[in-house]
Image (cartoon, rainbow, N blue to C red; front, side, top):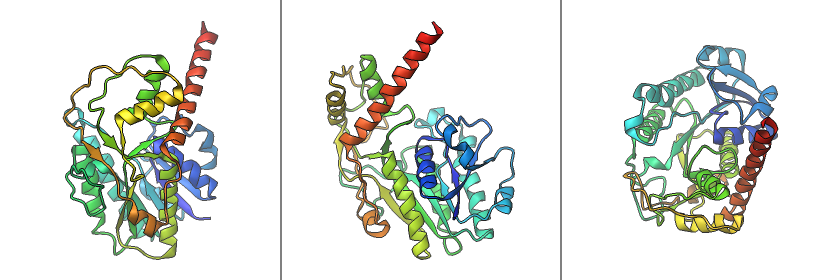
Amino acid sequence: MDTIILTGATGFIGSHLLEALLKSCYRVVILKRTTSDCWRINHLLDQVTTYDIDSDPISEVFERNKIDYICHLATYYKKNDDKVDYTSLIESNVTIPLKLVAYAIQHKVKGFINTGTFFEYADSIEPLTESSTTFPKNFYARSKAAFMAALENFTPKLPCITLRLFSPYGEKDNYKLIPMLIKHGLSNTPIALANPEQQLDFIYAGDIANAYLKAIEKFKRKHTLHSIYNIGTGIPISLNELVTLIENILDKHLELAEPTPCSTVNHAAIASINKAKQELDWTPQMNITEGLKKTISYYQTVLKQNEQNHTDRS
């Protein structure tokens, strides 16, 4: 049974990956902070080994466990630079993962999977390939790009893969676009979109988790230098089309307020996923309609539970 360090397990995508790793019979060691909210994975904590990186030395993790692979998903994310704590961002997105890399090399870890973002790419109306021009949109994306560039220096000693994620969605998401649209639809409140014509590439969290499993399998097949893979669907969906899909599933109209201008809005961000298909043998399985149905069902259940809890307290 291979042992995997998973950072970011308490987050949205990390929680989906943790479930997938355990179902695939991996032994999982998760690194978190003492302040991490574990609500997404409380039901799985008895199946994993846990370390708090703000109190447990990282060296201890490697000394007590024979680590085979590392899946690094932990991140500090802020969309707008004017609200960024730069010191915390650099520590979380560059300093701590570099420490992990150093220990991984020392303890002969077989592979390190990094998590990137499509925000690293320059704007383009064409599908983005892994060789497309990069021009990070904000300091968060710059920090991710900086760490990925540092990985290049370690690849002779540590096989590395970076998965550049496009627009994730699914159950237990953070408060982003799709959960926001669903919650406004369920509560019958209007919502404003910065650019309703904007096209994005929405990728279901379960498909993302499967991409990490495929990356681990690639490490098992052969030693690899640092490789980058786009993880999306390659299918553009405009925000207007997204609203219509959600309206059809909810069978109700979503009222849109006047668009809210936003300086960080791109016209489009669509992935070319040919490289991931060919080299990882990975293809997304969930289409947007079925993925939205699963996501909406989750939030409907949460809403009913909240209403029931409110009734019980009244």
